[in-house]
Picture 1: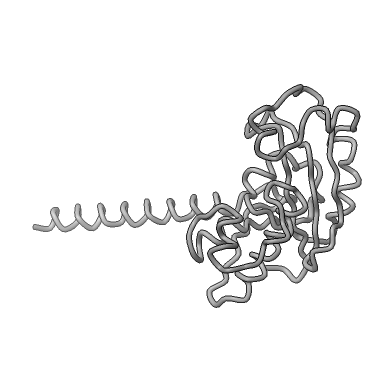
Picture 2: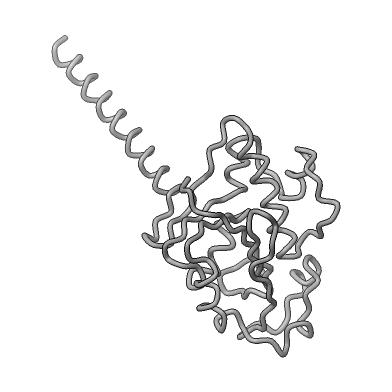
Amino acid sequence: MSNRELLFCDVETTGLSKQDEVLELALVDSSERIVFRRRFGTVHKRSWNQAQHIHGISPDDVKNLKPLNCYEDELRNATRGHDIVFYNAAYDTMYLKRCIDPSCRIYCAMLTHDRMFQRRKLMLALADHRIDASDLNAHSAADDCIATARLWKYMSSRSGFMPVDFFCMETGRNHRAQRKTENTGVKKSVAAFAVIILLLFLFFQ
């Protein structure tokens, strides 16, 4: 990890697809201070019943608000000089690539927890490690940021802490995917070498 200060980010959306929109976003620093918290109106979506059942944000709650794209410059300024931790980086960054400063490095708390322990939902992960979350409401963007910060603090204090460097905004490279590709390449090379050795063995019999 770099020595830059961390921000923890979370979003609430109208659904799970790339066509869905961000309704709420929060940024929290390592001391749990809220750096940015705002709800947004939508451009295309007019209803999201299933998502509303989870986070409680209704169309009426955001009908007079500006959409996320109106705050891209403000968010890039807020994230500049920091690295960002998401609980589920693959999901959240899908909506935020124009909102995060290009120099930011992205870490995934969920994959880090998966590497150290096992895959869990955020609040269940806190409960597993007896991390107090009694003051937090699940599926509130700000509270989920704070929950992620507490889990990250716990994990970073443990031996074997190996944060998953998920994505670099500047290069556009998914480091986890890159590592998988590199590992696959190594396996193919080993297999090819084994075939060559076998053929040479048969040839000289």
